Length: 369
Image: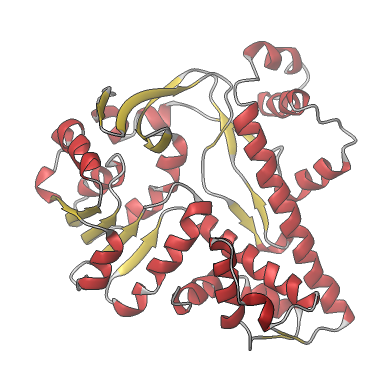
């Protein structure tokens, strides 16, 4: 980047760096809660507090109590102001129980190789992330993580690879796939089989003619074919190709597909490099509409990388500092640095525009990662 910022605009741009640090602290806070304290809040805790507060406010107070956060913790209060942590939602199980996949696919226990189909559950008052990140450009791209809970037990079907949950029919999956399901039409190409949720939902649409799924793991396909696929209403629309998604994209013309949906990552952390590798194919297959699971979170990762480069430019780093990489994050940052090397930033507005979703999507397409 070529930085031409006066003192006023430099101060405003540095506000973006402060916001990035708060966003990252917020992410760490949620990780700590979800790994260490998810079952710590009980009905009894809520009842003690709710005499003077709503149930959502009571959950927030209980959460702070369990994590030993006091009202005078300035760092937490600043994080709460930007990331709206107190906005915790009591959710109804009714919406999710009535989901077609949830209703029609039985919760079977089955195991093949490293893959296992099993029943898991959320406990009453167990906190969980239920939707995509909510981004606020007007607050220097502050990030709000939607946290919610049920008052009753919520069982759900999950597929586990080794000791890691690969896909599950939980509120987060249902909500984050809602838009890509509604958007799909015609001939649909799906990168990644998972539990078959996305394929099931789009195959039930009248405006979807066929669904072709690329999956490289033979055991995952066998598990799906034996326990999930028999319950599909529109089996004739489903076609599975055992192949690596990138090999297929590289060696086949996918212009015949109207819509391509990618879901081959667990989260934004392991998904950002895969996302960037797929984006370049949008240039090659311009007749196909590409869509991505949790793209908002992936763009948030990309935004943080660019802000890191901006901060490093302020610190005086040069080309020489972007020659080596010890991990995937470094490789992405190095690639972005050279891609953005001649981009002029003359104002805060220039930086805000560079960090917009449309700009980040364009950068990802052009990056040729």
